[in-house]
Image (tube, one colour):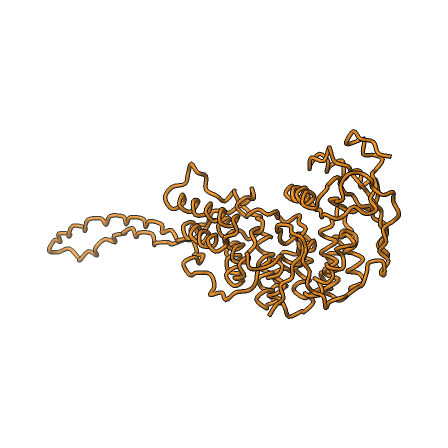
Length: 464
């Protein structure tokens, strides 16, 4: 029986907060306007709203039923099918999810998110070769951080590492990409690189637990467990998508046949003189009607939809274990980690592998907890990041801190965090707000962080 493992999820990217597909602006483009909804369309919209409400409340069973009703009433609405597919995936119905994501791709062939989810369901259903083929079709256009991690889950760790290493070196690479790369190293068995890479964005007190969780996923045959754990669920017996929801081709339109031209009246019989020779009857040309032609009416093109995973968690299962490494594939509410894999000890401590924070003046201000916003290659990059963060996230009254760490083989990194939180709960709330605005962060205890001298240029408060 698969062990349930819990860990705190950090989030960012691929349309992922704790929102539903319906809350995404792109998904709303598929929703019929209230002014034009009539009959079945209006009922479909009402069912869709019910599905949203049930999902937010964590009642995924009722949400799925309502979403199925919406799809039955408006079968060619991409947003409705995308939400239903997400719900199937969140409830462990992988076969139904694969079919429904496939329907989305029929309606919107350029939907990269649906393409990625099809690959994940194929991994869960024990078809890694099919998953790789699905990923190959979107590898050149989808996010490298997401595709790379999916290749790793499908067992193609060498290819995954190649993609993710290039993505991690690219300008603007964030902690999500680095954590995906770290997990790919772990799944390939290179635990030394997994540790040093993960250490760039994970606090030292959480690093060992992160590696223990990854060790539990190293079984190459546990495709269903990997995907189920990723989405905080477990596989269930699945009869497949209900037949009444099958996506049918658009009904053909029959063109009216041309009316046949009226036949001319028969020619009057010729009166023959006794001596006259027989005369051949005149040739009469009768117009023939055009043949009936049946053509398929072209379907109206659907705009692409990128939607977030359903955020509500099933009450009977624990949180996913992929932590920051899966923020490009799923977002989930953040909770405190509860690690129970005592038998897995890949490493004893971070300093043994050369991870040692550089000496820095201790932070003596109020608050024991900090929200780390990222790690950067230079102090100038730290200041630029803060210049954007303090406005975007409302940090004008907060104190920016920085500490420098040296990672063997990868160089020196400068962490940026915001301090002033007396409890982890208050820091968690700020971190959740950052994620809701598309950022990445995690909460840790203040340790070795020091105020920055340039803070007054952005907050009006001078330090040092």
